[in-house]
Length: 313
Image 1 (cartoon, rainbow, N blue to C red):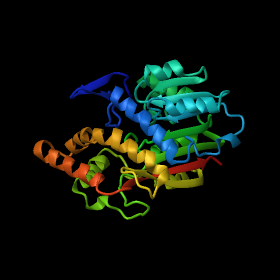
Image 2: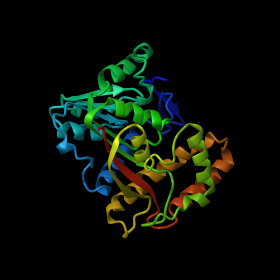
Image 3: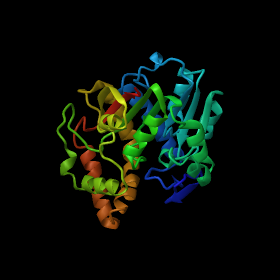
Image 4: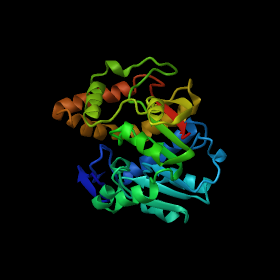
């Protein structure tokens, strides 16, 4: 199940060559979208990338950014913890630009966090070099001071394993910060679910669940952290707007980003996900048109974005 650094081309888009559940592309268009998304998220949650009390952590020596994408957050963490070794982990290499910008305390690694097996460390070593780096260098038992993960909902197919692995890798007093989405859509400033009535959305949920993905990757994090033996110290919820609304000023930039960068990519996302349901041709076209209509149906339609922070006792 090890990741590879090469990419696969489909309809002129390039994809990660990996056995993970991740379905989004890996090319310049997608990397540009990820950078814009990172900036919109920071504005949405208050102008800083991390909400954990990171400055209260003493003697920080090792940090990891899980699913680092283009490396934006990794570089921010490296600046925050200049004396720590900061790892940026993703299923494919980060762009050359990030590698060139990275200070000396950053190490990039390619691999899938779900491939780690603390019970059988030799298994990782025998699989490939990336598994060895992950289990023997990054996710050593009790070796991490801070774990950061953002927008992993399309890539993690076993959340119990993810939080078990990360909990075991934290030292006593170490902190994990998890920022993620629930894959449901709501009316602005409410918890009134709109997407339960959308046919295309039911197909997306079915396709996601077949690959082990969770539609509650954000809101379920607190429960999963507790089950992994972590203490939950804070949970904050934000509106990841698809259409800007004056009712949620902090999400204005998010809504503008979604309209400019994410919505144009939605047909390709739906092609990949609905294809797993056997939907293609004219039916795919119909479902895609319905999705684009529903997602623009009213101001402030949004997904819930939850920031959950846990601490190892």
